[in-house]
Image 1 (cartoon, rainbow, N blue to C red):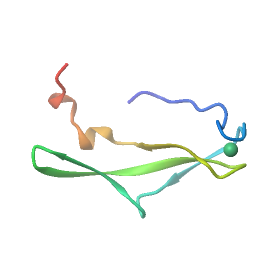
Image 2 (image 1 turned 135 degrees about the vertical axis):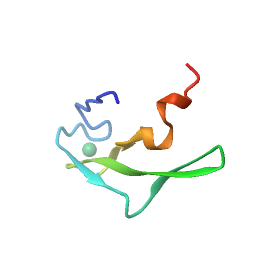
Image 3 (image 1 turned 90 degrees about the vertical axis):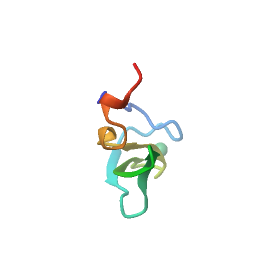
Image 4 (image 1 turned 45 degrees about the horizontal axis):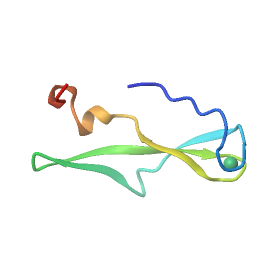
Length: 71
Ligand SMILES: [Zn+2]
């Protein structure tokens, strides 16, 4: 998985971020090939204004294994 660097909050310009698990609220669900797959979601939250700058999944392979890609 590629590394994403967030330098600044696009909303307030803040530079401090908190990474938090949001799995209690929502799970990413992929309905591919009639299978139900789940992966835990995480959010990067700006410490200054509280905006969710990024929401992401740490295990995208769980949703869409590499062998299924059409590359
Ligand atoms: Zn902010």
